[in-house]
Image (cartoon, rainbow, N blue to C red):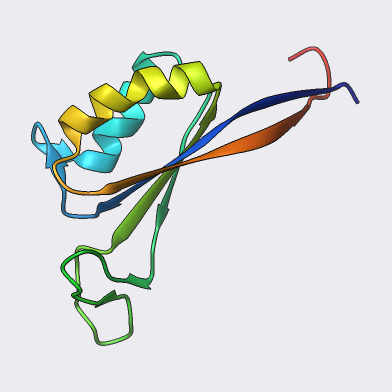
Length: 113
């Protein structure tokens, strides 16, 4: 199988499930923004327990009707593309956290795609 290697940046965006942007969930708006801008992909992960800057624990447990769970959005792209995205995300995210990591990317494809 063909394999290509490169370097890039892993952007992690930490927000809350209840965060909104223009009448939709913030995480949905961010994914749509990434798609519109031509990014290769994004993954949204919903946490089952966590706390943030307000120190309030949110947990998904049986008989616990807690909402506003932690949401993590991960994006892998070139350092330049991620850097150009940060100002737009800063407009959209009123409260959250971004982390950036240099990563080694190994893309494996079956060929023809």
